[in-house]
Each structure stands twice: as C-alpha cells, then as structure tokens.
Length: 105
Image (cartoon, rainbow, N blue to C red; front, side):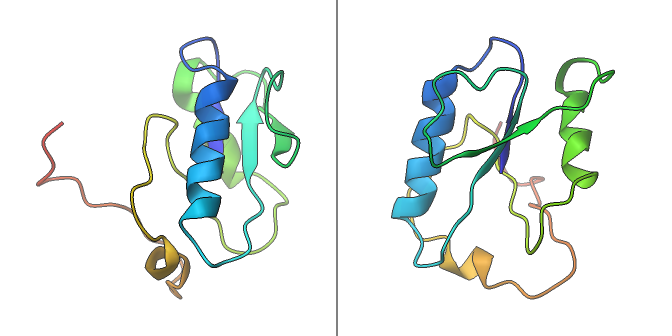
C-alpha cells in the first residue's frame, strides 16, 4: 500500500510502484493506494479515500485506521523495487519498520 496526496507525485509513480512490487514477488498482492485523486491509477489498484483533516503527509496516519484485512506492507512512492520482496512478505511478526540510521539520505 502507498499514499498519494497532493501533486508532488502523479499516478505514474503509483503505477510503477505497483508493477514493481508485482514483478518482484511470488506472493499474491492486493495493492491499495490511499489518495485524494485516483485519476490515472491502474485499474488493478484498490483505491482508498484519505481521511479528511490531516495536513500534508500526515494523511499516512489513515493507514492505521482501516478495514483492510491481512498483512500490510507500506512503501513510499519515491522507492524503486530492484529485487525480491518475498522475504519481507514472509515476515511473521506483529510489526516491523526499516532501520534507517546507516542509510545515506
């Protein structure tokens, strides 16, 4: 799942992310996009309306208040998938996050 809010990223970013994920996993994926503008999104992407009242990127909080069943995997629109996601999708814990202290940003 991802969030597309405002006009910084267009539908092409969402579509490329979706296809990159599908291409790099053997798991069956249902991809959700939380957005205020679904125009141009691939028809296989499930659209969820962002909750009102959040400012800027805080709309990501919507991800935690949803009825989407099963495991959830969130990724930002500016990410590019370059390898298999199967190990991530196989994770069996309750919650995980990426440690970023050693990443050059």
